[in-house]
Image 1 (cartoon, one colour):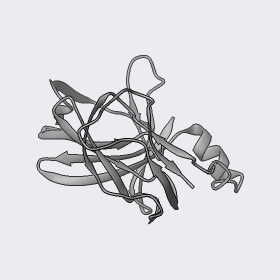
Image 2 (cartoon, rainbow, N blue to C red):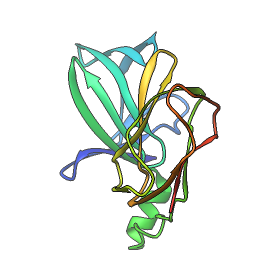
Image 3 (cartoon, one colour):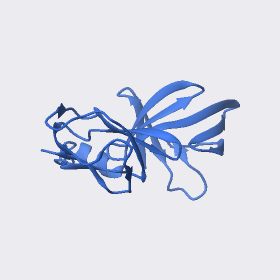
Length: 167
């Protein structure tokens, strides 16, 4: 079970553990989804047709940006551990100091937007990584200061390679 929200007042509970169906707020989710490839989907739900495209996924913060029929929608997901920490009043306890940014996938560095010594805030763009014909903006996972940039423009990088170290 996890929660998805677009704003503090718009929250949905999704349970995908059921073997026969996904539930949305306790009700079976009757939809038809066709994977069109490269993060694009066609969805039929309650007699309406939707074109969906995954624009960005930040696995560390569980934030997702979609385009639904051309309109950007930002989602924030909370898994059962996030919900438990929140209920215990420890939602910030999961935050740890991040010392480096690693490549989430192999690709090509097409833009570097920071320099050593630069102060960044969580979510600030650091680098642009081109992978599978898509440009992925890699953002600061937390507030901090850039200690060093370990790559140069047009470098090919491997998954897990350190790209930026923080001071």
